[in-house]
Image 1 (cartoon, helix red, strand yellow):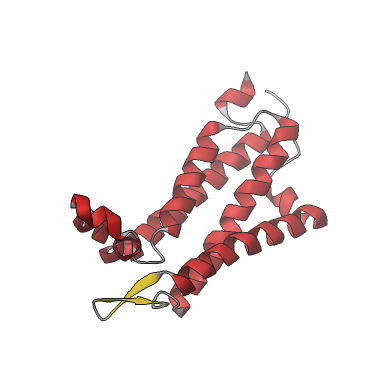
Image 2: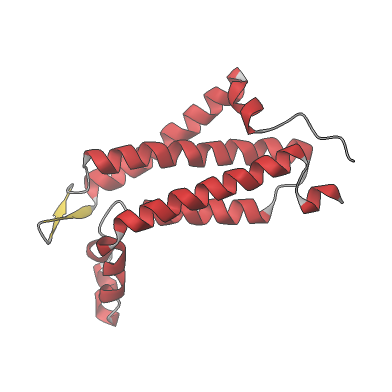
Length: 161
């Protein structure tokens, strides 16, 4: 049996320097999402209203998603020292972060030029089912964190080679 590496996500969080990096990157992610909630249109009473996405639920979601995404970014940077970073971890986590970011504002109202091509009806999917999209984005981020933890510990299939 192969000896396991001592590095893991829990070691990253307990280190003061990486904890500060996680909080800093998380603030950057949250700041971008707060700007989107404040300045892009959201849905209120079936109308597109600028700033309508600035709700306590969206702010709480943005805080959680920002911290998870920051943990992934700092973990991927830490994995550069141990092994080569995994494209699987980056793509799963990136998809979760992007999916969650487009669910905090009205995508159909923000990109009106797309309505010329008849795609607005498909973009309303993000507005109608935004709670489920937020849940699925958090699930994707947690799966990415789990894969990253396995990579940092050296338990993934690619790390065993």
